[in-house]
Length: 212
Image 1 (cartoon, rainbow, N blue to C red):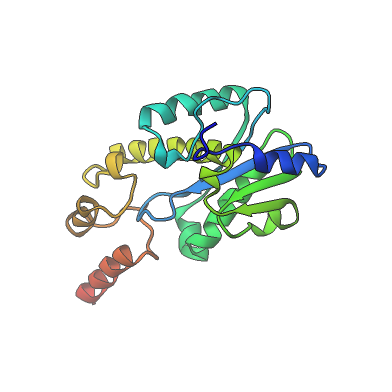
Image 2 (cartoon, one colour):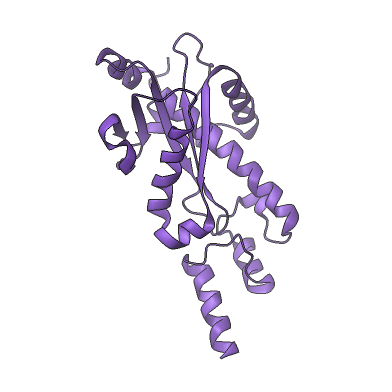
């Protein structure tokens, strides 16, 4: 396997240390101004791993879609999310942790060890998890989770774009592109915008000053 591609080393280590059901978890959507933060948890069958798994950012949209479809068919896959309201209440970091906890909790069989992308562990997973910096480029299970989460969230934003046209969510997935920020100024804020995020908060504050 390409040394620059993720492998099964972290999973194998956990299995050799006594784990029997090892899953990877990753989240997508920390940076957008709109939409939930979404996490996926994936437990791969060591004997049936799709070829070409990698950090979702390194794959084409077509390849991500093909792999996500395969993963839903042959792996234990679960999604979790934290809503815009939860993001605004507890902040995006804690909401990301919550989404990951929910994804892991939704697996068909409880994971006895979880590989988590990043340098922090969700509190509910503390005693049975390993944090892996750049895990989506190093662990096949985390790479799989990154693909599933991105495909699902991107499609969600396409669906929301049909309800709220003009923001370009079908192209920018809610991230703060120039088009999105211009639309915020011209069209205003939707129920799906994160009010705690500065560009959205500033518009709300401007509106409040004007109305006052």
